Image 1 (spheres, each protein chain N blue to C red):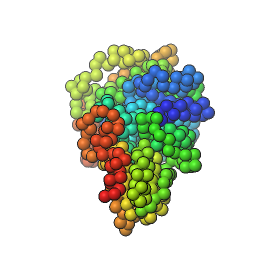
Image 2: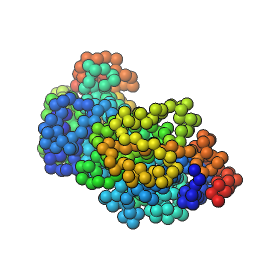
Image 3: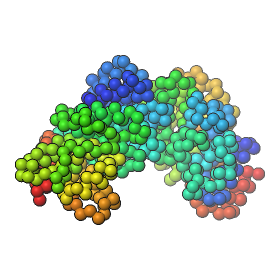
Image 4: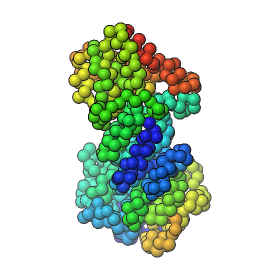
Length: 304
Length: 267
């Protein structure tokens, strides 16, 4: 997914002279071709995230579309004030490509886990927040990102994720994709949690529990239109995210239901990470299992 | 150094603003006036009638709390009528306690949180190089502001990219909010610091018009590196009771007699 995203930056840069790439201190192989072919629009600026976001803002003020890439934790937390003031307050079209959203960096420990990124990014006016499910959807997102007029946070998963998206989805930033039609129940998921939600829906189907899967690749702006159309048709919703329960997709859905559908009585359960720091290393999957984010947990939540 | 009529005139605009809302970062604006005056009178290229002119020099007041001085010079240059400044900090004013990006008013970037403007200026200067434009990008920072680590990240980057058209000016009035910079977080040896970060460094009297004009229009032309002008200034310059007085860094609830005392100093 990351390689696809960065390859797309190069493709966009070839066609559009406004596009440029800014990394911090990434691997030596990153965008090696772009560096060779378009060196003037390839930047590797060192471990200086605050400066990088400010510099990207300055470039955006001059009409460029900077794609900034580094590890999600450092691209969100270290330079948060620059993101708030330089990018969002001035509403500039900078794209933040965040490596390792969720528990991807499990072996590296809690300093590298990006499990609050969606919350702190979606909080900011003008910021868009996107978390696609596979590399093909990433390609569609990158194409769509070119002319998105606002700052955009792009959360990357580990890579090698099972392909579940399709050309027929008609990808649009801000438009959710119904991956599976609902019966009475609906999973609402984002990123690679959509793969797990689809598996859980198949399991449950064997028990005659008919669950739909709504893939919210864009967490902000929230696709209220689709939610307003879909939610009155179901009685139970389980939201799924590789993120703290506080402040992420599930919170966003609860806020939406409270504010926009106050008379609906839908049971909503959130699957996500409880309010505590990770106390294990291991793998992404072992951490997810530990947090109660797995096909079995999703099935159990829907059955209960 | 005695203030001439033009320096007094610009200070009077500031006192006119203060006389309405009775608040503002006064000391921080007063140390800055001659720096802005030199830039806008005799260095920067711009056109108030065509404020978005692509080849204009870019100017960022990174020490956004000095905005009273910026507003005064922009009004004086005709970007907007002086009277609009009397709405300073009021609900529907364009002019708050820190400047917000508005190209039509001559304000290039939103600043106020310290340590942001220099990185944006670096981005603008790189952008100019990419577009093969030869305008300058000038950024003014406060001395307290350069406590921020992000300033030094930007300094390394400016040097790496050989941004010869980038000029940083430090309003070195030596007093930050809490007290003397020497005590809060000593910046010295400041010249050596900037040199070691790859800059051409000039030290000037930040109230001496001719000296600053000369260096901006002559000395820096041959520079093969980005330039920093360390401008030695006096906080509260022009009002004897405010000079070098930390309590005049920011004031609210100014009394009428204080306003009158300021006018008195400008006679």
